[in-house]
Length: 121
Image (cartoon, rainbow, N blue to C red; front, side, top):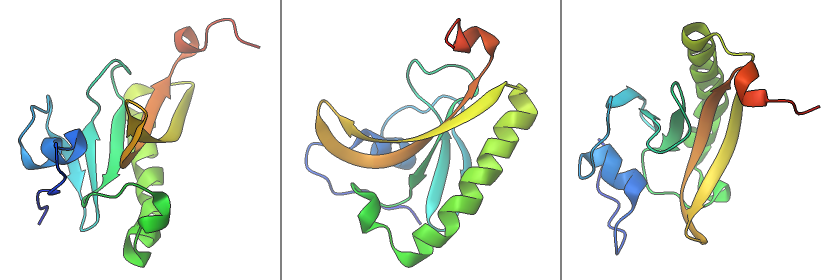
């Protein structure tokens, strides 16, 4: 069960999980420790986030169970994005701040096509 974070001033990641903020497309997957959701914001079609089901601000705060689930889950989510979107590459990166303040960590899983890669070397 995913509980409210209890974070003073709110946490968008927690609010999305508990339905306090709108989440177009809803959740993709929930495990005991992690939630996979469609990304809200400007990162493009097919981008999802993988975030702890509890409010966690630093990777060092992950429990042993959360840590043991993470690698396989990120691989599975990346494989699903690859299958559905057929991108040139799928990027995974950790985001953990908003307005310069550490916040609920989340791994962004983002497909990138040739048009996204531009003319970079």
